[in-house]
Length: 313
Picture 1: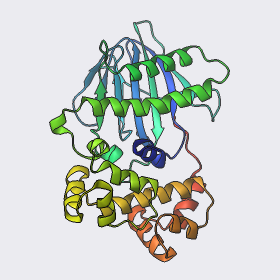
Picture 2: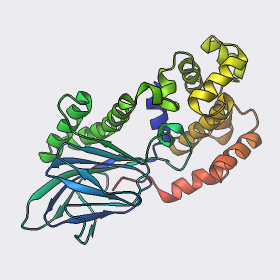
Picture 3: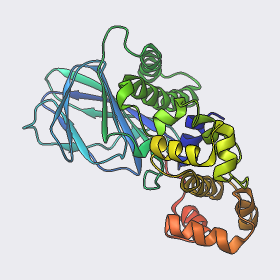
Picture 4: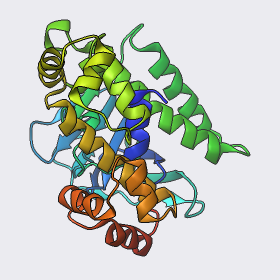
């Protein structure tokens, strides 16, 4: 699996969801914080995004906005309108597709409002390097793959057919990748640093790929440097400069993210999870995991089972 897809998959904690929202003026909608990331697409009309912190952002038809932490915020036609809470209706609890309506007699604004259940509290630069709000304005020829996915999603939600739940869930997943790709592509070369820049760095990317391909391998700075064709010292400097942390720090963090994914998605014994992530001692693995997540792995797994598998709402 490529590095970006692997990182996003490891951070998922549930299925994404999206709701077609139609609001007629005057209107304002309050979005409570969610455990993950969120997005809005303006399909018709215009509105304002009012973040928890910061200035309101004007959005026009075709604009896409991505909120990396799912923070509380508001969408409205005018800033003076009292808000109502966003509580979409779904055909079933398992459906990723919902609808929400704010009735009225004024002009209509149509939005696609979605959420990605992601473990945003766990430090990984795929999300940590992003701004809190990404705004991708519409424009001729801008991000054609992203626009194509948006058009397909709008069509599927406007007129659901048999199999729409699967199609919508797939398109919403694709949308996240296209949003990130589009934002990465817009960054000036002189500002390109951090994890996104590392994906295209000809010396650092091979080492990152090796870590993601086999996190349980007994990697050293020297062996990772060999993948980059650099000496130990030169590689360590290059990796820390581009990624923002030393290579073995990244390796440990990725092992913990991978272990958490295995605890969520499998019933494998803790000893097997420890071994697959480079720990010959279950005690050492539990200690490292607790340092990262605040809970030992067994308690983390039990807490997940008690909470259930969240579905974006």
